[in-house]
Image 1 (cartoon, rainbow, N blue to C red):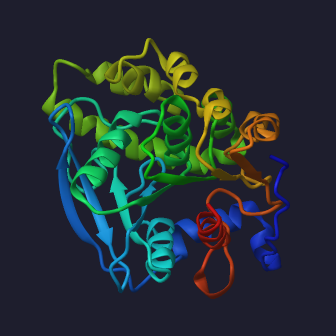
Image 2: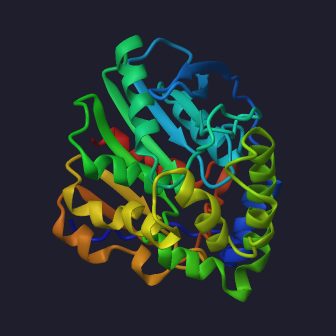
Length: 318
């Protein structure tokens, strides 16, 4: 499909990618979303916690919302999407990835950018136990990569009507390189601190699988993926993980109408994360590249974000 022309015009101070990213992550507040938690058992015996919120009237439509690295279902971007869709007669289920709901998961493994087996279990649970005939999937950042990989690596159930991916590092190694640059050191160090903290908790539960020396060797996010992510999830090393799990290679196979919104001033994204060629060659793939927005920072009027309005518009036409 032709590349979509953006209409996003933020206030002048939110044209700065750093400002929009930090404000959206730390200062935004979304009220009025009442979530009900459901715990499901995954195929390998582990669990996921799902946080549901509902439209005022019974509906056959549902949006599944996936968070980014070290996020959870209570992040403003998650609740913002849930609120907009609930107010437009669509139920929402915000997924907490393994270890992200406030309780350690049971296995040594956790979550990662390509863990579509967990998304598959969520979709199967929804289809087999609920009444929804129209299901949409919206993922942010890491969750966006998971969404695109899921849609492109398999034949998805007919109930899946659309996908939306926001601020997607669809080329994981390129995004990793960007995060290691000096201008992103605050984000990099914040992510690393959280991830290493979780790994120390894993060590207390699985002392034979991770050593003090392993943890001490982690100086960068790539180190973390070499030491833990790759080994815990069956990859040879970080580069093998990035190669196998980058959604870029799956975009050509997507048969479900799918919208990607990646801001040109998103400092997390490398040039490869703007899949112009893939969008032009796949009639089901719609790519929008606003000049502004930072990373998940599409601040707009009345606390309804541009990506939330565009996602709603997109599912209404598909």
